[in-house]
Length: 280
Image (tube, rainbow, N blue to C red):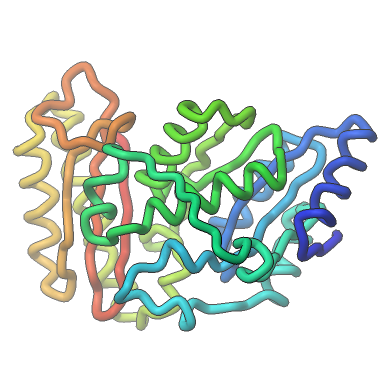
């Protein structure tokens, strides 16, 4: 497995791959990889002949109250995990090299990025869309794999790819969960054993809404109330949002009838912010 740090090195490796007749898969990450990330790499390997993984802690998607410097950097563990999962190349640029001096161009996917996490993390999705657009231009992959846990991010990327005509196929991979049902996240490392147990109220809340759907309930207010009741029963959780949304637009709905919808939840547990979602 090769590790490169610059766009010219990356493009040269991709060019060699294409000359050999192999397709290119891509998994963008910020490192601190867990089984969820590794499952994305394995999926990309199934879909392509050569897999590029980017490991880049992107400064532009951190808000004013989010400490970029404290994001965990675990490159040696990440490198081993990538290799075991089947990655062929890691692209790990420095921020100074990746963002040209005086860079002032942004990709802002309006509307779809406004609610949910966008409301509470201003500028986050602008940073995400911009860096992913830059990575797509650098890697020029045939297929890119994203985790479904970051549902709004996935919707933003899909819309950006559609609107800007990026020639890349976007695949969504199902959320990988801890044995107790909590969605795997790099942030889980900040949870105590007790908090990890308390966090099970989030998937339980989603299941409460799904159970109502199975009985034929389509009223979003009732589905939301069922989930909120489960969250409220766990006082350690401080819900930020619990919404029933349209999968394509991320906009709240009044009814799930005839629509592809999901329940999306964000909570603080101590100092850790957790997100999760499920189709309805």
